[in-house]
Structures are given as structure tokens and as C-alpha cells.
Amino acid sequence: MLRWSALLARERLTRSRTPILIGPWRSEVGFEVLYWLPFLRWLLKDIDGDRLFVVTRGGALSLYGGLPGLDLYALRSVESVRQENLYDAQTTGLQKQLSVTAWDRDVLKEAARQLLGRGQDYHVLHPSLMYRTLAPFWSEQRGMQYLASMTDYAPIPKPAIPPSLELPAQFVAMKWYTRPTFPPSDAVQAFVKDVTARLASQVPIVLLSSGHQGDDHGEMLVEGPNIAHLPRVPAHENLALQAAVLSRASGFIGTYGGVAQMALRLGVASASFYTEFGNTAYAHLALSQWLGMRTTTPFVAGSLADVGLWQQVTRDVVRVPAGV
Image (cartoon, rainbow, N blue to C red):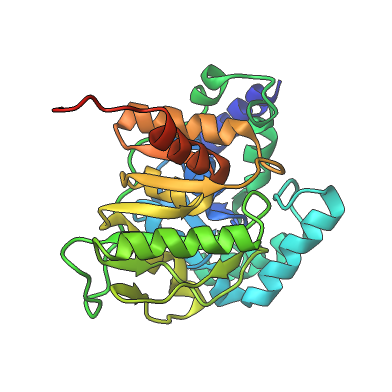
């Protein structure tokens, strides 16, 4: 039934010649790259790109294959967007765009005036359609075949690097942040510090620091030799800069979540970590691993307990014969 709703929406949009406003996307970047972009590619595959206009945030418009649009942070403040996401969480129990809110409608009206002119009719393609349609996959009621029937995982183009930004010839991108699967603790802090120091002794590290808090994630900044930070940029350029730098990295290491999934979608190998797997769906991890195998892009995610177990196994169990 849900898939039929998406098919009917696709037919209605295809038959029309009216412009389509896509968004506003104000959810996390992991869902944007892992589900929203592939869902849009499937839904809009037979629609003229001249009719499409995107409203997203943080410069993520660069991930939409050249479609025109507006940045949400040019229309609303970071704090306003954050408060609307918190309102969603309080109303539905999930920080997801499950319905078109009055706030969303006001944003779209303003975007339409700037992009299309006053009085121009337009269709709205809101993220709530994706959230409703793909919910059976996230709840594990439907499998990968269901998801694949409504998505297109074509590669995401690499965003352009700002001309003034100098990067090492080879480097590892890194981002640590707290979230429900990686809550702050002394053990987490010690692990992050140790991994960062070990890696920085071997290869340059570029931290994907943003300086902007658009959600409930808290950045964990690390310092030390051979570690570089991104320059501070306005909020409407923040994600674009992170994605551009990440796409040029030899690999990514950090918290399991949206940035690791963005690395995967940009074709960058990653290793990411969590301490507990509550408040998130196993389907996201299963899809990420499936995409990693399909695109030959290594995607490794594990718990801190796994790290300790592996160290114990290699120390106490594995025995290398003499002379080997």
C-alpha cells in the first residue's frame, strides 16, 4: 500500500508540468545520503530537471547533481531549524519529518517566491513521503528487495573543493561526535584520544569540524601534531565543505552514523564505532554493509567492546609459528 502511494505520487508529478519544490530537508545527513537522494533519483527519473528545485541545508545542495535550489540556512537560522527538529521529536517521538508542518509550509512559500516568482503554482515533494514509504524497511517488516524497488543508488558526485583550501596529498578524514549509540564517557574519550594519536603518528588527519550545532550531536574535538581543522565557514557552507574534503580523503574514521554513511556514498572507505546500538535501526547498518560490498567501498562498523575483544584474541589466542 505504501509503495503504491509513492507510485501514484510519481505518476502525478510526471504527468504535470508544474514546478516541484523538493524539501525542505532538515533531517540528519545520514538519512539524506542513504535514503532521500536514492529515493528522489527513483521517484523523479522521468521528470525534466528544469522543473526541480531543492531546499536543503548546510550547502548539501552540492550533493543533488546540479539541481538548482536554496539553502535552508539562508531562509532560517540554524537555531530555528534545530528547534523545529526538536519539536518533531517531542511531537512524534522521532526527530524525523513525518509530516508537513506549518513551519515547513512557510519555508516553502518563501522559497517559491524567490525561486519561481509570486503567484507561481508548484508541487511539494516533502520528505514525509519517503519516511512513510520506507518505514517498513527500517522496522524490518520488509527487506532489501522492497527498498531496492524504490531507490537508485547511483554514485553521488564529488563536491568542488574551495580554491583557497589546501589539503595534504594523502590524509584521513576524521569526525568524532556523541550520539545515542556513542554517548560521552571516560572510556569513549580515552578510546578517541588513543585512536587519534596512533593514526596521526602515521598519516595526516583532517578533522571535519563544523562549529555549528544543527542537531543533538555534540562534536568531540581532538588536538595534536599532524591534525588539521577545517576553516570556519558560514552554516550554509558547512556540509558542502565537509563533503568536499571527505570525498578526497584516503579514508574516514570516527563515530558510526551519518558522516560514515556519507563517506560510503562518496566512495570513501570508513571505519566507525559505537558503544551501544540502541535508538537506531539495524536496517541502516545492514544497508550500509550491503552498499559497501556492492560498490567495493569498505564500510567497517564495530563496538568498542569488539575492539577490546579483538585485542585480546590477537594477544592470547593467535599464535604465529616460528619462522613465519
